[in-house]
Length: 344
Image 1 (tube, rainbow, N blue to C red):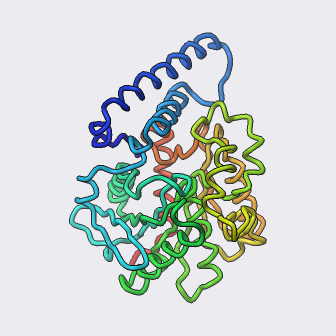
Image 2: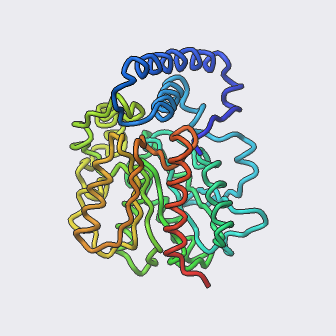
Image 3: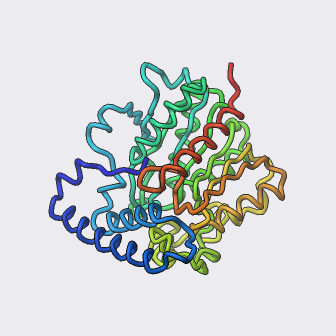
């Protein structure tokens, strides 16, 4: 789940105190506004709106309060490092990657510029425990892909492709057991990898794709017009367009290039089954809708989960959503995996 890294908090007590003051002010303003407008309807509930302010303030003061992982988590999680990729492997107790019924290759979000593979460590463990209760042995492989501005496209795609090939060729995991997933920018990377694998079926066709609040249009044509920017405050289309996108595409590519913006891919026909999640209060929801429409038009099996009142990346749970959405999104994801996993 989206959670605090208390190691980072302890390392920066002054910044955390500043965060507490700023976040408290934001939530107090929100509470007073909700009281003042108690007879009005809102696109999301108070809990989701308050958590959004916590996340926004934390990322503003020190993003590592959230989008990082403590040393203990890193040291206790299997790390695979090669010349082509670095990845963490999260499994259930006394379980091996090769024994898994389904392997979720999860690309984390963070605008391609920040974040950590284990920032969602709580979410992965929750999914794994729930999957076990359903009779599904789930493993999560989460790559430490290259970040901007040090690395530009296509370094990110090359890294996750190398990881995928390693899982298929070296680990001997049948490609049908691999599910390519990601949230936000990680959803963009997941979609790009899915399209690449479709065009190179000799590598091995994965079992499916799972996109959570994906950012698949880097031109931000639709998102820039959203009237939800004051609600889903963690997403700032103007900042993304002016800073994050140029750092990724550099001088050699354009934001509308289908290899970078999968929304502009002429056809998605031939993709494996897709699960797409988005919230009704999301700024980037049009990106999800574009992908869903393309799948429907091109005959791709697509499952959709629309989280009522959900904000950006609500499907990761914890500080990103209320408990109801956390549970519902987890159930949908696991049902999708269960449905499309080829059990031996």
